[in-house]
Amino acid sequence: MVREQYTTTTPGTSLERPKNEYVYKIGIYGWRKRCLYLFVLLLLIILVVNFSLTIWILKVMWFSPTGMGHLRVTKEGLRLEGESEFLFPLYAKEIHSRVVSRYPGICHGSMCGCPKMVEFHGQQFQINSKDGKPLFTVDENEVVIGTDKLRVTGPEGALFEHSVETPLVKAEAFKQLRLESPTRSLSMDAPRGINIKAQAGNIEALSQMDIKLHSSDGVLLLDAETVRLPKLPEGTRGGSGISQGLYEICVCPDGKLYLSVAGVGSTCQEYSRVCQ
Image (cartoon, rainbow, N blue to C red; front, top):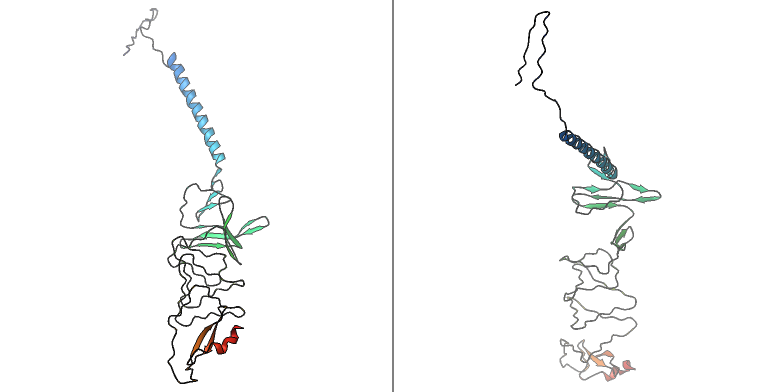
């Protein structure tokens, strides 16, 4: 602690003031001052760089008071305009487009990803692959599936209320293919023929009523080593000239079958003119 001395004199007396024994310098001097200025300058540089980066990020990301870029924040939620790509899954309660989205000369529809269903309104809906190949196309006239294979994995199969046109219906390997109509008829029509072929198995046709094989202009050809009719009824011997409503199956030399009225003996010779 510095003690100051006070000296009193009478008028006309001169005394020398004592010299200060202690001198204090207020402030920072030397290398400390230079370090302080350097630190302040460094802080100013960092502040300018951060401010410049902030302005650059705001400009690049298109930040604005209403959103960022094509993304706008509204009272109803988020609004995204233009084309966007999501690198990760997008989760939302509801996703929908504009009621009517228009480009110069082109009118597109609208799509709504609602909580219970996805709705699309437009003239045509199309899904493309990464290469731009149409995979699924829907319009008012038809539905086009552009994949090489259509697989239905549901246990009940596929239900079609109207006609289906396809060049091939094929089951998976080691799986059965079944065409069924539970309450109505099943019809297969082809102008140039229907071919049913089993490479390593049997072909069975089961019916509760009758099975009819009819050819309007051609013949019915059974090409096999053996033709069997195991449950063909046999008539009993009756009086002469009584056919009992039974017929005899006769075979022509060329394999043609025909019926003749059954008798006591064979009557095929009597109707052999059918083979001519």
